[in-house]
Length: 147
Image 1 (cartoon, rainbow, N blue to C red):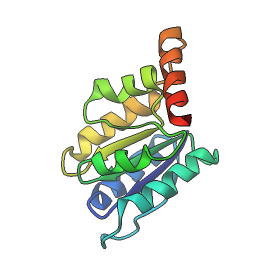
Image 2: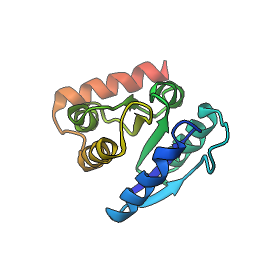
Image 3: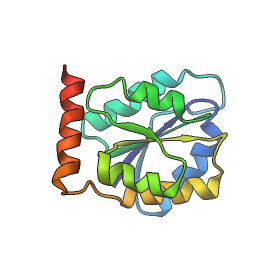
């Protein structure tokens, strides 16, 4: 799968080993920054990351900031993006299966490397359900977004 990943300065230390994990699992990784531990604003990274998803250059995205919250808020401002803070395994796969989440947000100050790798594996292996209830609900989210 082609995955786009980005972080602010708080997420930068976790992002680097996550890129290695993704590549080691056979994913094609696009890194949109930050590229050093210097201060950067997460909305700028979220804009670059979501642009790659909307253009079709990546199927899913992973944003890493301090808590994941700011990244999720920023990404969800973009039409066509469904972002969620995913800090447990069940939510990491169910967010995709039930809600068609296309941007996973992680908090580098909340989860460690081992858990982050497990969460990413659950997120990327999940597929949106064919269940009509889930499809109907996601369609309603898209309608809300368009209004």
